[in-house]
Amino acid sequence: MNEVDNQPLLLEGERVDEIGFEGLKLIQEPNEFCYGVDAVILADFAARGTNQKSKMKAAVDLGTGTGIIPFVLSHKTSLEKIYGIEIQKNSFDRACRNAQMNRLSHKVHFIHADIANPIEELESLRGTFDVVTSNPPYMTGKAGLINENEAKRIARHETTADLESFVAAAAGLLKPRGHFYMVHRPSRLVDICFYCRKHRLEPKELRFVAPDKNSAANIMLVHCVKYGNPELKILEQLSIYKEDHSSYSEEILKIYER
Figure 1 (tube, rainbow, N blue to C red):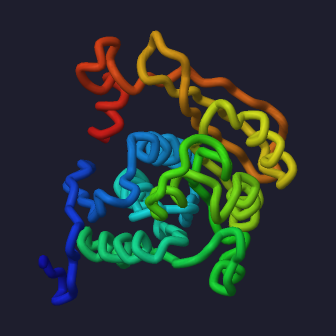
Figure 2 (figure 1 turned 180 degrees about the vertical axis):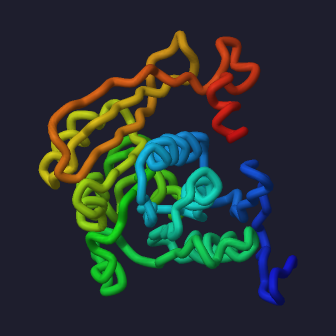
């Protein structure tokens, strides 16, 4: 067992992964859900947008898991406060220990809550954020193979909160003209646009992401603005790997370098 400030750091079955970004590390449990490259590219997408704006001070990540997106944002932006909201107690506990391990507890904070059933602490934060990010479950409740592992099932399937719940929570937490960044599947594009407009989040940018430049996109990045004017830009497609899949593409490698 490792310790930070005399507190338990690593529990049985957990590991510490180097995630880059000037030495940031993450405690994960391999038998539960571990973050993927989609979380990293979402954090970079949000960071680029945030850095182009002035006076961006506070961000919150919905369904944060063990905190990968808040930690990458802490490296890539000058945001003063970054929150992560997580329903799973084990993941929430790891996120808190990750903040402690990375010496970021003064800047990165985590809340154990269900975004579909806001607790009082979340209600007090309504309308206070400049930026909201989310990498929500991609699968609807009955779609795809249902994982018997509860932690993985909750992370991958809409079991506790559906797509509209994440969009509605983002809209409620954002300031007017605040920015919402999400990663999801292209197959949910119509639903995403419908729910975002329903909750006054206007889609402004869309970027498709494919395994390589010769493959069809299998995920996408969406940027919305609360009370924004209608105008959607389709950005250049992003490839995760080189054509032979021998390594990440140059753009992905640059994301990890910045």
